[in-house]
Length: 292
Image 1 (cartoon, one colour):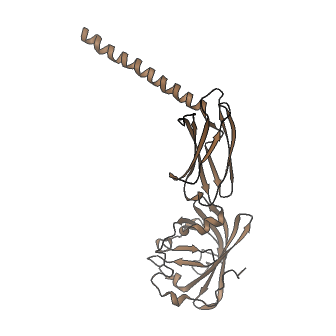
Image 2 (cartoon, rainbow, N blue to C red; image 1 turned 30 degrees about the vertical axis):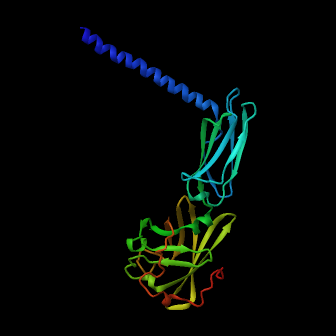
């Protein structure tokens, strides 16, 4: 009987201890929330935006200053350091910073450390920024790889086309790395890639143009205009019409094509006209920036 009572008593005591521990944790969390608060803890922004967040502290606390640090994907920005002084332990402060070039390289975190007069940290809060590039800088930052080609509701993007990489250079030149596999008919080898251009409406890219030259007509530019459906969130969606009537009886001479591209990091192994002699694709009449 004594053994049974002892067995029942131990869980009872453990339950009481655990309850106090949970309560203590809850009290600690509540106290932490009552110290330094932000009006927002996460924002989705673009280069050039001004981030504005309200900081506040309760009255009658031991906090004398707020130290602000900045990291990008966990790496400290060494030359960034801001100190906000409190007045009589209270604070109502608008924190503002511009989203600058370089912030798009990772997740940006502003960490706010509430400290006492002994420089001891009493509380901390983070503001996390997800930085989107504006459309044109996004186009230039990455190479682009076809992931989907929709015609009449079906995906016609075959593996030999999906390994082609497109590069849009800042000097308006346009290049193509065919990858390790050419299309079944080796259609890529018939074109020299010349240039690109865009139509803008403010910061929005409305249309994208690519200029190529066909080896059968080396002095006549082939200008393809795309409607830009999307250029954001690591995706580019283009739409255009083309004559496909000669490929299949079900296709028309004004067929709508929607292509989706994903960004890939620019690498040194990008090789225009891979597997071919690049000198065979030099077009003297190519003049980037002069086709609109």
